[in-house]
Amino acid sequence: MNIKYSPISEPVSYKIDGEIIYIKARDEVRKIDFSKVPNGKLVSMIDYLSEVERVDGELTVTLRQPLDKEGKELPAMDDFDTSEAEEINYEWK
Image (tube, rainbow, N blue to C red):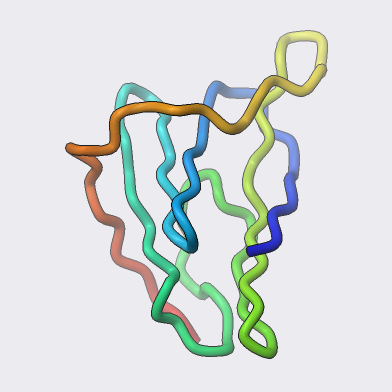
């Protein structure tokens, strides 16, 4: 999986497990599983993901990069409990 970033000024962290993305924000953990999607792209909006597409079998995801008050990048990847993550449904085309 290729990962890109675009800036956001609110706290968010991610955990990646293969092609499953866990997003922790606002005291909630959400799970998005892209492991079985064919070539195509995400057409529904998911908070903290800017763009997701699979081309020639390769998944590329653009995550929102958290920034501090001065605009400096904060760590995006973290290790957190995912056992109670809410699975997010999405539209793929």
